[in-house]
Length: 363
Ligand SMILES: NC(=O)c1ccc[n+]([C@@H]2O[C@H](COP(=O)([O-])OP(=O)(O)OC[C@H]3O[C@@H](n4cnc5c(N)ncnc54)[C@H](OP(=O)(O)O)[C@@H]3O)[C@@H](O)[C@H]2O)c1
Image 1 (cartoon, rainbow, N blue to C red):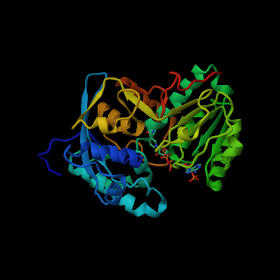
Image 2 (tube, rainbow, N blue to C red):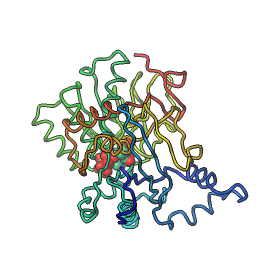
Image 3 (cartoon, rainbow, N blue to C red):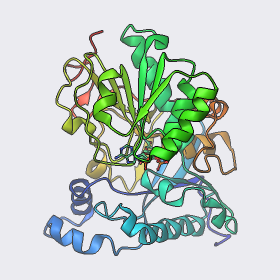
Image 4 (cartoon, rainbow, N blue to C red):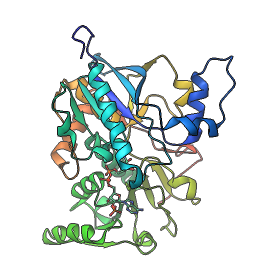
């Protein structure tokens, strides 16, 4: 690390969602004289590019404080997220964190899939003078608070609701279950690994929680009034829902609504998202080539967590891996977040903002 380089408040390590957005971004930042690259050409080289700095970001808190950080693209191939490529992808994330340290970033957020890759292994960065967070506590906070808001706006009582969590044994899924146990009428747990599900069941039954569980979504979905989807998978299919169902799609990449046609009578929104109400700015400003949200200043909870920590001047490994998110942590980070004007994103999905003719909930 160069001691003369001014330090950055944070770094974000991220990955791109799909080839369409990668192509738009790459062709956007190439000079106008160059021919646009076809996606096949991009696919040939993309995964071989080492992690690198793409742009800087400055964000303003409600208190007037400003923080500045860097976005580092990991160049993980979106077609290669499976276990076969685990070692390659872990190496990319490690290199990206080391680059963050070289850029003199004080904290680094592992966005989306990159946190899953390093789950529980952030100790390996102890030699660097930076703190690492998965960002999952603020993500979980935005999910649970937005679900509470959606339920209240639909006129239902939370304690009469049956809540299905898809990805119930994951870091964020477990946090949602801990938060909603005792608050909803019934918890319905779904994941693929039966043994892990049964472990979770045992603990919850001992605590007197009313639960059901299973591997088959087909059997579980019709019972649910509210669905939180936080599975690390793009193979989730939602069908045969109850009328008026509320669905919070908090997985990344998000694609539930593209497969879910019944949006008229139901609410499906992208969850785990927040809004920086006092704004943020990019340098260079490439936002035209990658910003696709239907409202200003939106971002993922995992990214916003490191920013809230920077606003608060907290220097610790905050969200550290599977099973460590507590209700106290959720309330703490959410409270800091609101203090700095980082609020829940409005309800939206890939068709735009909800309740503007795209989507309604009629209960
Ligand atoms: N909105 C945001 O800001 C934000 C931030 C961070 C993460 N995320 C996203 O949130 C999701 C969860 O993150 P995490 O850290 O909690 O991941 P995680 O700890 O790896 O948990 C994933 C969960 O999904 C389950 N799962 C995987 N494939 C499934 C399938 N086909 N059907 C049902 N369950 C399945 C896993 O259990 P089994 O393996 O047993 O099925 C596990 O319970 C990821 O998609 C991540 O990218 C979003």
